[in-house]
Image 1 (cartoon, helix red, strand yellow):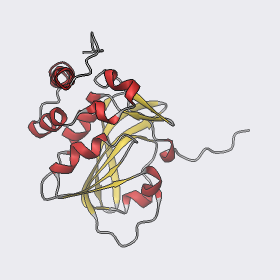
Image 2 (image 1 turned 30 degrees about the vertical axis):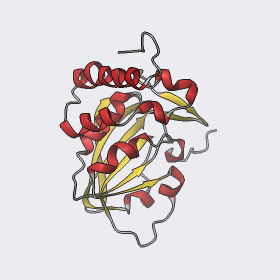
Image 3 (image 1 turned 180 degrees about the horizontal axis):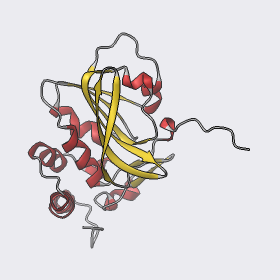
Amino acid sequence: MTLLESPQTTAEGFAAARQAMIDSQLRTSGVTEVNTIARMRAVPREDFVPAAARDFAYMDRAVPLGDGRFLAAPLVNGTMVQEAAPQPHETAILVDGGSGYMAEVLRPLVAKLTVLTPAEALATPRGQGKADLIVIDGAIEQMPDSLAKRLADNGRVVTGLVENGITSVARGRKAGGQIVFLKLAEMGVPRLPEFDKPKGWSF
């Protein structure tokens, strides 16, 4: 599904759009994990976008929220949750991309979820415990030390990455104090400019 053929503003219409999203965007692209599908069926995307954009909440692209923020496309959200593989005993951190949607999807899947804004993620952590999982709802150029320090050794990260202007979904694991990322698939992940690398001087 690329666009609702006739916008439906009733609960039944949105529920039908949600099921169409699962059938024609997620399952056909390999997002099939049971908990991921169940949560994306349960959480109404239309509640996390501006009123004028509700009819477009199930498009296969990001929805602008204003102030440079976006609700990522369903396939990006679904791929991130599936790759994160959250477990019910785990402590997780979500860096929110601005919509609040991913927090509602992830919260029932872990024991504890802490939601940070990008600015909070860049701040020095103060005595908090380590997380088993970090999900960044956006694409970053670099993983800041302040956020990496919040992750337990052998902990996992799922994020968007920006390389040479191209965004992809990536998975990482912390070992020996370092996080190494593996790019999984190129996708249109909304960029989080707070995580851009410092720009050097050019002459």
